[in-house]
Image 1 (tube, rainbow, N blue to C red):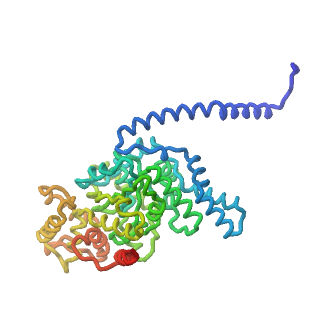
Image 2: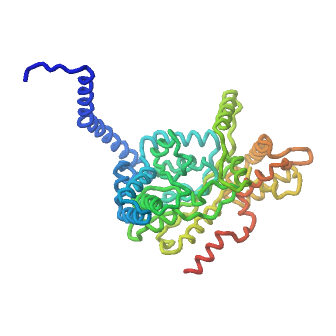
Image 3: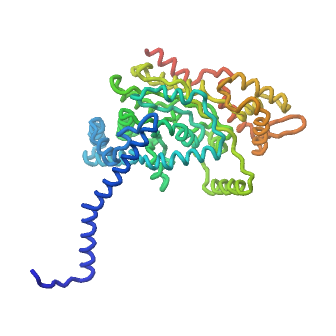
Length: 467
């Protein structure tokens, strides 16, 4: 027992490494995790005292535990059996596929990342790029939602800045969970997005097993009281108008709703901009008739460097205003969870359209698009003022005393972007820029013209007939 044993140096080093790993995994790591977990829990308790809607335990659950809960859900297990039978594969193969889907979907929310970094970064970015305007009743409508209800923000999708704006504006309410497309599954962006509570979805997946895993995750999150952000149009608007709803996520919310459980309150959110950062890319995709967005990294890098150069020279200016207005909330219990989801989708889209804010550049674009030729600056100012009065509180271009300066700013922005020409005979659209002018005009056109019957109206009529 006391004899000396000689070992090769490599084997001794290997034994020491194994001992260190065993000690760390059994003693050190659990203690460290426990220490940081306790600190995190204390931080969350302090944070919840400040938030209007405290962070629910579901959102703070460990990602591994949430994945296990999801894949062992009875409905998911039943779909696993169906998948194995339909595809003639062993059930353990189908189970692994469902597990991969769950790992892909389930986020790893970090309250520290969301509130220490995410909210501050969103506020800084939003205020750097835009003058942010909000509806007068936004805060009151948010706080009118019962504490025991789950809030689902239903938004029109104008720009990828939509995520930033709503995250910043809802920061005093609670943490939002977004459904994001496959564009965000790029390292290292994917890790940051997961830590912010977002979950990835495959827009083009039609597999029943994938849809069941996604549906059950959404339904569990809703039942757990996690505030959600949904873009019912299913993608960015290519023509500036609010498109008819796609009912995927909405149908999951309705199908999983229990009238005796938590109510679900939909908060319509209308978003508009003086400048959509991706306007050229979106307009080009709309003219082609596809949804391929070909923005290159080099173009984005040059653009950011140019803006940084302007800031260093003291010539930096914002793109204009960005406006966010919350519409009248809609309780699912009051609306009726048994009514067709098509009616719910159309009602929410109608509420978004009804509360769409007006800004100077969209109003200018609408007036210029309707003109047959050059318009004098005075006539253009009169038309914009008339439309602003018609919009009433939905016009968020600024106080009336500052309207001359705001009009001049908007005209200079359009002129600087080579959209319009300002000449002695009047202001006119430059050749080839008609689509861009119409893109901005379309965002508020429904306030001033009667839209012809569209797909949403047809859905509403058909659904009503089935009642």
